[in-house]
Length: 250
Ligand code: SF4
Image (cartoon, rainbow, N blue to C red):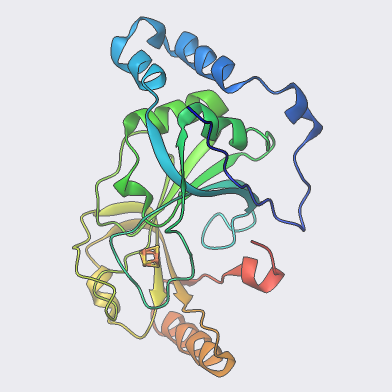
């Protein structure tokens, strides 16, 4: 069987892979280390996960700064899973394409950036595809904290350290899958003038309103002004900007 290779796109403005990548354990070694560390070597189901070659469709894996919300400025490795159940008009990701990858193959790419403390699972809608084994294996094999950016329409597996809920259902013609998550670490709403009362039932440690970024410069400015006004009028929310766009990084 031919081995699938993901085209990784590290940010050109950030350092490339560390020299430590050259001595990085192989995917098989990482899997073995995980099995030994977790005791899963004696657990048929987990061993089967590795040996049977469970795979996930990965759109891209890249190293950059988290550009939005509470963790803005944090060096992170982003794992973008392919596919989403919504179709937002303002969607800024081309997530449809992807390569089927096993967990050890994903870890091998993630560990090209050993210094990044955070993995951000994004998409598409990552919650549609991941499970407990994916999250646990990723944590154990990388030693990194796991964050997720989700539209909240699907339950999350256990073990995620930071949940960013960004509901999109019902905004414009995004789609009408109901939001099933009721709590999160941060609630990050792309603001298009919608009634903020609809989010009052969601428990969140941090609440952010983020202007909708569009290519039309004048419309973009109007969106920013409207979002600033909304935060001034509703100070339980704070402003989130897409700083990666301002900085011109991925
Ligand atoms: S939920 Fe996110 S990834 Fe899915 S279509 Fe909307 S903006 Fe794009």
